[in-house]
Image (cartoon, rainbow, N blue to C red; front, side, top):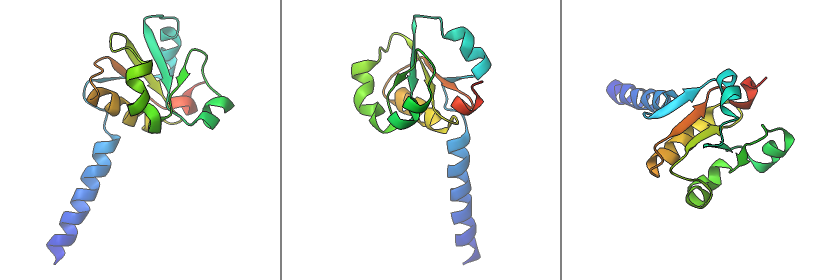
Length: 120
């Protein structure tokens, strides 16, 4: 019986760690480095927070596509030819969004570490 509990705990810990690790093939970018990227017209900038969060505060040049709408809107609103730079509030939703985009076939995806909380 003790083994079952250990297995459940191990599976739980594994899933938590998997979510926290950066996605393979996704570049990680600090907010300090993001400032230099914002002038590049060959990149797409998306904010995956809710519309309310986005309206409250956002970075000029970022387009709002909430995470829950990303899989439906990405093909219509984003180009696979250009790099996609993704931000959220803390970096967790943008990490999930990066995984979604990679699974959809986007090859140039960058996650902003720390998100808007780290933007100064």
